[in-house]
Length: 130
Image (cartoon, rainbow, N blue to C red; front, side):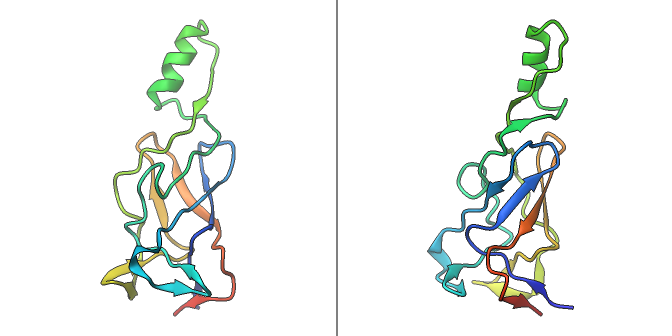
């Protein structure tokens, strides 16, 4: 079954973040789906493509650990700045943009603090990836 293509403005959620975020896809590849830049697995850069998710609830995040220690052991979340070093997975090997697999709604992105970033809405619901 085809899955929706992911484009600029897609709504993302991290499993340890308290708020959703938006995917930013720069128009550098000049490939669009319904007039929006389409995402590739390499659109994974923190603060460039992946924006913060409000506050982080991961006990693996060093900032959460430090804030919790400063609060005498009372769990204290920290700003959820994603740390993503690997590409989106698995990508769509049959659909490429400039030779790079496209992102569909089945793709996930891992944060170094243990969070799994997924796509809530792909931004353009009318475009599908075969």
